[in-house]
Length: 144
Image 1 (cartoon, one colour):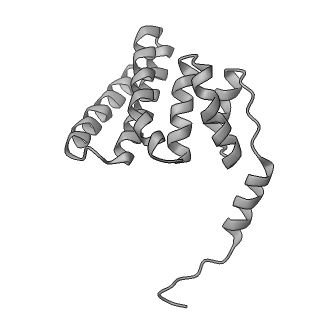
Image 2 (cartoon, rainbow, N blue to C red):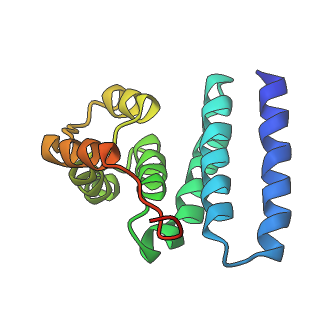
């Protein structure tokens, strides 16, 4: 577990340096937030709840501007995850509602929601629309 923590901390340092160079890059902010969630999970498993909460709060704060800029499902899920891990259910609820409507589902997110005993029901119609869209033939404007 210590090796994993060192690796994630190194990744966060690299991402921090990149974010200083590219201050408006939402992808770097999202990756930083996701790494902070992972660091929090590692430190929680090691029994350092204060460090875990600090990492999760950093994740929440880092991804908030990305969430406010649009409806990127990965940013919404990261923000919702951070809020749930911090036991901030009231903050998580509107994010979860958006994700439900989008049909967002991943095994890790589902496991967190289940572990926190939070109601989360994906919109079956949204899932059907996404699946149908993914089956549509891809056409290229360059090669009609």
